[in-house]
Length: 371
Length: 110
Image (tube, each protein chain N blue to C red):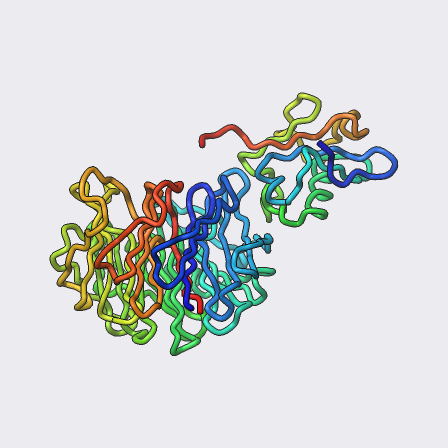
C-alpha cells in the first residue's frame, strides 16, 4: 500500500511526518538536529531512503546531513562549499560591490537518475553538485561567471539560489532562480547559462524590465510539460510556455499577487496552487484568512480554498519551499507556515486539515510518495 | 560524566565543546581528550579535534581563511583567547590537561 513521508524543515530542527495513502492519521518524528535551522530536506527520486538535510546556524555555519534509511539515522557529509577561483563581487543592498561569501544551503535537488548525485543551491548565490552523495562538492561555476553576476543583489533573505528544477526530458537542461537576480537556464548540463527573465516587470528596480535583478521567489514545473514554468515573483504570478524564454502574468483575480510559494498538481499540469501574502511590507496572509488559491486553467482564474483553514485572526506566512504535492491518485497538497502548522489536503485542495499545529516556524516542506 | 578519547598515559588536552557541536559529533561526554604535540596552540588543538571528528570541520573556524567563526569564542584558564593568535602557546594548565580549553557559542539572540 502506498504511503507518504513529509519532510519538514523548521527554524529549530527537522520533523518527519508519516501516513498511509488515506493521509488521515499521522505519526510525527522529531525534532531531528534540534536547535538548528533546517532550511531544506529532500529525498532522492531514485532511492527514496536517501535523504539530504541542510542544517545551519549563525554560530557554527553549514552542516550537510545524509540519511540512507529514510531518516532513521543520519550522518554528516561534506560541508565544504568552495567557490571556484576568485569569486569576485556582487552588489550589496546599497549598490556597492560586495565579495561573494558562502553562508548556507537553501535547497537540495537530488538527481532524477543517479542516487549519488545531488545539486545544492546556496547563498551567496551559486550552484554546487556532488557526484558522491555529498562526500564532495564542486561549483558549476558557469552560472556565477556567465557575466551578469556583478549585477546580482541580495533580497531581504539574502542572495540565495533557492530553486533548482531538473528537466526530466533533457538531462542537460536545468532551471534555477535567485533572489534577487532572476531565473536562469542551462542547456548543456551547467557549463553555460543565460538569464530567462523576458517579460518580468519589477517596479522596485531601476530598470523594471532589466535582464537581471528580479526578485523571483519560486518556480514550479510539471514533469510532463517541462517547457511550461510557473513563477511566483516578489509581486506577480507569471507563466512561461517556452522554457522561460518569455513570461506573461497570470495573477488574474488573486486578492494580492505577492507571495512566496507556488506548485503544480501532480496529475493536472494546468492546475496550480499559490498562497497570496498581503505585501512585501506585511508578510502574512490578507484579511486574517489563510487561503490557498487554485487555478485549474494555468493561471488568471483563481478560486480560494479555505475549507479547514483558519478564516479569522490568522497572520502567518508560507515560505517559498514550504509547499509540496504528492503523487497519489488523488493528489495531496501540503504546506507549512511561519506559525508552525503543517496542513494537508488529500483532495487537491478541496479540504484541509492540520497534521501538526505547533512546530517551530516552518522553512520547507517536501513530500515523498512511497510504494 | 565520562570523557571521550581519554588516553592511557601522559597528559591529554581537554576540550569542552558547546552542546550543539557535541550532538553534531555524537559526543556524549562533557569533554573530549586529544593528543596534541607541543607547543600546544589553538590551531593544533583544532587540527586534532577536526582530525578525529571530521563533521566539526567548518563549524568552529571557517574553511578557506581558517579564522574563528564570528560567534564562536575560546577561553583558557578563565581568560578570553578568542582574539589571540591561533599560534600562541596555550597556558601550561591547559597543555598539561589540568584545565580544559573551552569552546563556546557566543550569547547572541535565540
